[in-house]
Length: 553
Image (cartoon, rainbow, N blue to C red):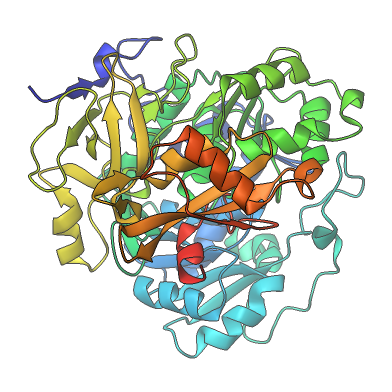
């Protein structure tokens, strides 16, 4: 028999999903909080607080401005921004008009930005002054008609309460000729009115997140108002976020997981979010201490770095009760969780979830009262997960490895202007993820790797995450990444890229790692080549980029 899981059998805290203020787009939740608790803090930015009433007013003003530019329902507006309050304003203003948010990574260089803006067909882009030169160099090759510019330091208070990154303290650059100044727009009394009421359905597209999917160039995954509402409600309820929490957000808002945890969930719950521009280990501790943060989403390297801060004992971290975490580069283990629990004085640290852009992420969650280390939890509400043979498409037995296939109300509408790719990935409401994994007899999902990253060594399937998890058990290894390289006899063999712990950098050789691996791994798994690196390539969210290692092995 095949194995299929239904979320209703696994949700511990309640039997069904409850929408706190009804089934409506998230910007309506923002309006609700602005009307019912106008003075409550919404976004805290290094000591500057925007109340819900202030945030909603600025969202309205920016929506009126965008409407004056001709932005209409279904139009795409690109956001080329790092974390900042302006991101909240632009995101919800676009969606109030029924237009579509197109987040672009602020780490993009010219060709990456040009590709994404052109694929979106965006005519309006919102960016920061420090990124404008990149925009200016590609603008003539795109359909962009209007560029709105802001400064990351714009919302800083005179006397910050926590350490501010140096780059935010730079003097605001003059607004380029032909561009709009976001500050001037928001201060303009001409835009101080309600935006037009747009007839919206939950099935209307609200967000276009770019992903490589299973193959090819990045594709825009079309996500709806309903997708966002469902995953936000499910994420808040399964992770037990209450309306009295104080959330700490440092993960990039342009990334689907950072957007869910740091932008959508606080607006849904009406909680304050302490927003940071980027990760800094000591600033994290300062923020938890000063604002009495209770809830945090991190990656394992962030927790490790925070525990290494020399002055850490100065900070009171006991307010923090929940820290969901993603294992990027460093595996989240029970030992690391216990260490964080002691370090903070009681905070629970556990694996966040499995999910992907095409499902608005968060397809599973880890039940905090039934943590199972090494897994990615159980399906969230109204979610079915199947494990199928990637060649035959037939479901496999419980515990057997196969392709992860998902269906729930978070599933996207398809790839923007990519019907063939859509048909390949989205079949009868099921997303064929291109990820390999298995489900155990208790219903917990374990992700083991991407199909396209799987190596074939002497006919055996080898997944990089499997080897990496074993490598980081070596006492000298801090981080590890593996790829397959051609081999005349075996087809492929494993090559490992290793970052050593500082205290071992002069005492361990690549051959030492190979010999240790030979003793601890199957013959087809252990790396035949080991290369030491100072750092491993990673995305802005800390996700390991093995493709860069494959391109420059």
